[in-house]
View 1 (spheres, rainbow, N blue to C red):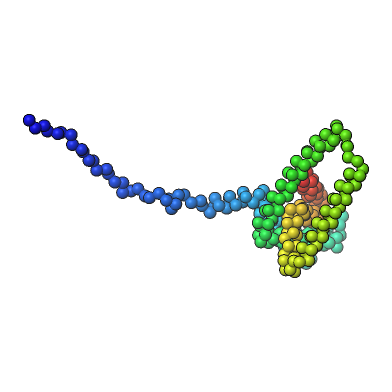
View 2 (tube, rainbow, N blue to C red):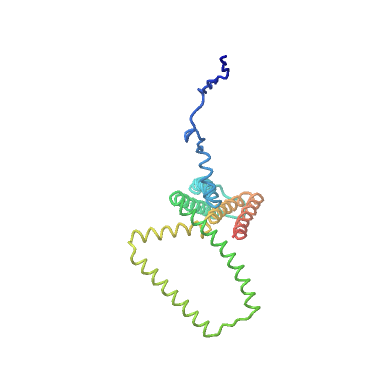
Length: 258
């Protein structure tokens, strides 16, 4: 008797998803321009970000104050009623205009230098931070080493110290000679570019740039407050005290920070 094989392979057709998209680099989410700018500012460091915000503000204040004081200086002023005479008031206005112009010049030069040499300035701040951290670690190590030397005594003889000093002096002379030889072999254009880069880094990293601009602007406001004293003593002296206190606070804050 014939047997009937009922086991049949059933093939089901899988539905195809017509809405699926091939995975690839194009399907990944690309960063926006705002995210890129924020990441670049974070990499620049706090110091450069502060300069980006401070310098344009200082330029606007200096332009505003300089334009007002210049128009007042060349115009005929009313005779003052208190303490100062008309000539003294004009001198105070001229000094205020001068300090506004100095702040404007320094802030404008700094902003142009930062826009052109941004990478160099960022590297300078990072190197300065690494140097300070290394100096702190070295100072801590020196204190520990000094304690160890004091504990076990100094076994070096005078001759060893003199020999070490001679070797160090010889190394310094060779280093100085190599540096001079390298500067002599450089082309004039390369030498000038190197010196300019060193000056730019020094201006931003070593020189108190933001403090100087702040002092120029605050000093201009001090002289404007003295002008007000000639017309209204109470209001003028309040303004002089406030601007003088701000100037003193800016200097103290700078030295406390550094």
